[in-house]
Length: 174
Picture 1 (cartoon, helix red, strand yellow):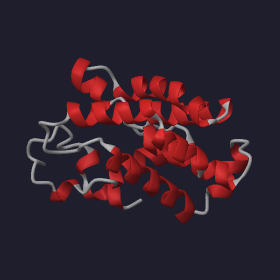
Picture 2 (cartoon, rainbow, N blue to C red):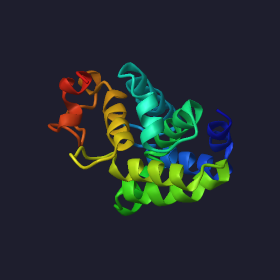
Picture 3 (cartoon, rainbow, N blue to C red):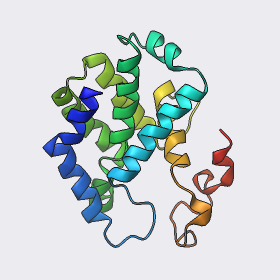
């Protein structure tokens, strides 16, 4: 996955990860550093594989093959919360802002226009489930929820996601 490696080594990507880490230094829950991004990328790919959807995903989106599909899924996972720091600092929607940042980063790792559009849409959509969201957006949304075991978190009482579906154990019943 050479393009994913390029993304992970990109100085600007790493700067955004550092901004997330620095911006969340006082938080005790739901950190959005590299570990979370990797978890979401892996879980999203597992969800696609477990449901035998990789061939569908590749064909429906005009991708060049399974490797391109895997790299696209991983890139969406690695970038989905890239702008969380901006939300903390300025209150902007991290999903919308993150899609803009991803649009800047992805060509640097040689993703093509079709892949960039798909990834950016998934990032934009990942916060809220809806009937109109893309296949990749839905997988990133579910992977994001599955990446956290909120019921075991010591800070769950203070968590801003408290009482939402994102905190519910039923998110594990995908």
